[in-house]
Length: 479
Ligand code: NAP
Image (tube, rainbow, N blue to C red; front, side):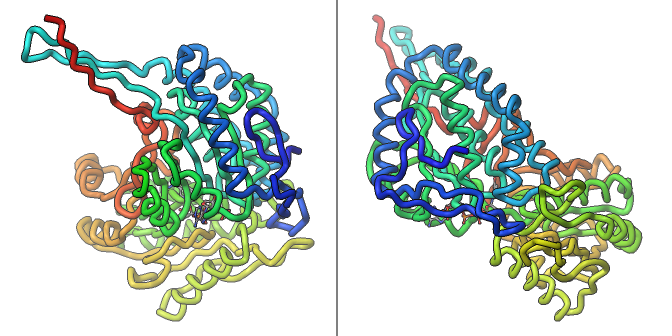
């Protein structure tokens, strides 16, 4: 298991010699002691990335594609090892971690191809003596700050487009889950990336490490996935050197079920969206809005399905819901349940912590709350836990008003059989992603990202690579 930072093609301990402990949130078992890098390590990584940039930028896209595709293959070769590591670090069930590895590899594979399609343009000039061209060039060193909830996929979703575009990169993973990023780093060497093209700095002092991304002109792009609170801090810091930032921030997804929806499909979708990773995904349904005619039946069916979920250590056979990642996470989930109950909601299943033999006290019973109103905490804030609050609504415009009545705008879900309503709702929902009768919209070839407080920029698809490219307009007088 790799525990050192990757700088300039070599794994090195932190210059300070310090390490920090990574725990399994299910058991508190120590997984590893990892290099506690600081600003000086980050600067060394940025310098290495800057040295590697000219050659990497000038390599043909077809050559840059080779190690990217090879890395995807190596990740799939090592899928079981990566799956186990991911599950240990962040607590998610093995089946989900396995899906994450494949999802993560898909970004490398897809961008290996997309890098070959970074085309320029010619523009017809008004002056016949001129030729007008637009070049799209890699912007320079890119930095990435990733969260713990998808410790593998959030690295490759940034690495794929950055490296395919011709940028070099420094990644700072979350302190709870540095080992997954280091495992990718180790495979990146085997995949054949030149030294300095991809670097990983692990460490506890995120502000100090990431300040180095903004304190000069070398890093030209910072991609962040995490909370809105930290996203705002980074956006403010980016102003000093006018560094471009992409922000994938918090969500507060409405999951809207109309009377004419296929309820079986809506419940299956609700389960997949809400309880994946114990509800700790930015696009997971956070608020269920169900039209009055099917409300009671939806709650009944959802309650039966949720009550059957198996809670446990993510690495134990059959586990469907693992622990929350830390104590703050479970306290927040409990607070949302307590607030809802205090204001008149009812628990139809779950509602409290679950004891798992040999486990920590971070396991929350998958919960359904009915009788929820939009003023309750769980309808105002992202819960990031396995709580499904259900609110009844009467009309399409009521649903829309509740759905849009939030500063967040990442993902929204819609279950209905009415085509005209689908189009009206899709156009009116203030969200970056809308799943129509589909609870799992994320895929490498489509643009992922939010509006309002959910972020800036997009990851995935041909849109994702644009974040790493600068346009250069050339006006060429030829006569
Ligand atoms: P977080 O606290 O914002 O942490 C995310 C990353 O930022 C970690 O690497 C963290 O490092 C670093 N960080 C923390 N404070 C920082 C600071 N002051 N300056 C610079 N970096 C800092 O988020 P989280 O609690 O781990 O993740 C959950 C949030 O992420 C949720 O709101 C969720 O919705 C959002 N999320 C969004 C997406 C999306 O695509 N939109 C995807 C996944 C998650 P340390 O770990 O070392 O503190």
